[in-house]
Image (cartoon, rainbow, N blue to C red; front, side):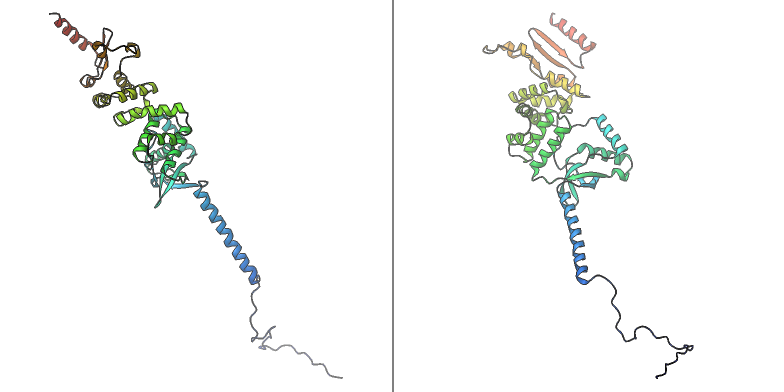
Length: 343
C-alpha cells in the first residue's frame, strides 16, 4: 500500500504559488461583444444626428425662438410702414418688458455674417433698445427673442410685415399708401397696381381704393409733412384730388409748411384745411360756365400770409381772414386801411 505524502507547514520565505503561471496570457476585460458595441455607437450617432437635424429644421421653419444680440438686428432692412409710435403706448410696452420680459418674439430673416433683417416687431426692438440704453447696457435688455423667417423674396418680406401690422396696429391710410409708394420706388414691385394687389391682397376693394387715392398726397408731400399719420381720411382724400388736379398746389404747400410754425398735428391740419378750395356748396353747378368772379373765389394759398400765421378766403361777398396772426393789432391796421380807401 502506497504511503501518503505528509504535508508540512510552509516555511518562512517560501513563495506562495498563484492560480496561473506567469507565462499565461492576460485575460481580456469583461464587456460587450464587439458587434454589440458597434451597433450601440451607431445608434447614439444616429440619435445625435436626428436631434441636430430637427433643431436645424425648427430654426429654419421659425419654430425655434432665437436669442439674438440687439446690434445684430437691422431695423432698416425694410422700409417701415409705421411712421409714428405713440409715446404712452411705447412707455407701456417698456414697462411690460421691465416686469415680465419680452413676451412675443420679433420676426427676422437671416442676412448672413451674423446679421438679421427685421421683418416685424419694430416697436419691441425699439423698446428694448431704449431700455438697454437707459439701463446703462444691462445684459437682460441687450438680447432680443426672434423667430427666423425665410421669405422667398423681398416682396414676400414686405407682405409679412404689413400683415403683422394690419393685425396688431391700426395704420393710417397715409402710412399704407406710403409703403406702397416706397416699395415701388425701391423696385420691390414693378408697378403701383402690383404693389397694391400684393401688399393688400386681403383688403376690401374699398380699402385698396382709398390707399390708392392717398398716393398722390404721399408722392407730393412726403417729407414736408411733420404729422402725416394724423391727417384725417376725408382731408387726405381731398388733398390728393386737389394735388392731382393742380400740381402747383403741392409746391405752394411745401413752402407754406416750411415757413409755418407747426407745433402739433392740429396746427398742420389747419394749414392743410385752409389750403383747400371753397366748400362744395359754393361751387358752381354742373353745366354752367364759371364767371370770372366765381373763378377767383375760394381759399388761397399765399406763402407770405402763411409765414405770418394767416390765411385768407373769399366767396359770396365775404372775406375771411383767419389764423394765429389774427389779433387786435391786425384788426386796427385793417380798420385804418379800410378807412383810408374811402378818402
